[in-house]
Length: 383
Image (cartoon, rainbow, N blue to C red; front, side, top):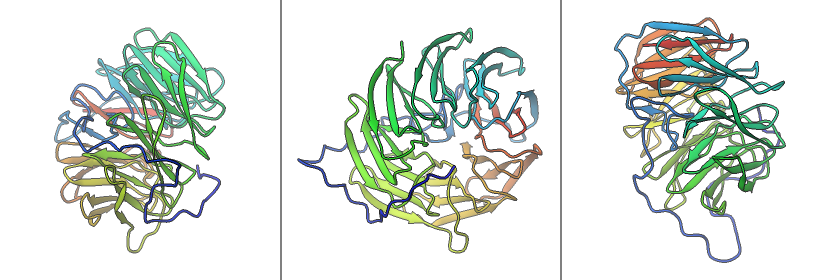
């Protein structure tokens, strides 16, 4: 969905004027996990830094293990934890499936409202997800019973991120919320000037996200204080990815942007020399490379340090699905209905599978399996 307004904010990046001294910024470190563990993919993009990278090893040649037919479109990206796959659908169901067999363990209904792009997060025996009616749900991971709900004033397409005893969620009411994991009590809320579509990436105690208000935000998780407010030059649907204190994200102004979080300086911006289309897909960051899908039907690999193109791969339709990586391979869905496996170093196609329906959801990788849902409501598991 396009954000409805566009502000005249342009680079170079500068800290927006504010009274008093600017808050101290976190120094670069390696505290945030850079990859999802081999046995789990517990949230959107695998880890709080939204790396999109898994430590799991996948077979050199993938084979279809099972499919599950949901009752409606699957735009929600799966989470995997403790041998269970969790995914939402437009039918309004959060579904739990056995990772090995695809057998249904339980189904939780959000009511009359569907689940769109909001993807589950699993932590502390709970599964968290938002629905298109603006309600945020905490569900018992073992039984599928409701634990608590929290109501926002706009649809939820952002995905939750759990940090300690708090869960973060964005809403189309313009707020980023921090809720108590145990009971859903509001800890704080941070107001932006437009929809919060992106999922925040966490680094050194700060949640970073771009907004439909064309501002790149950094909010301290402990108290909701604003740490960063930078003009992004365009509205932003895509979630950021953070690697070693550098953040990367695509915008609706046809660019991918790199920012140094310590200095708050723009390090580079990338735009394809001929094809100028927005970025809806969220990037992955691995081995000094950023990989992201574009609405130009291409998957782009960009040098983290220079912003120069390393390679591009052309699909048959736009790429809104966010790519994932395992080992030396990239796994990416496209609206052409195909799941692609590409060589990370060269972009050479190694394998593809045709689902015959657009893939907007993103791959989840854990325990030697890759799981992805399609627009015709089929969940696929490969291994």
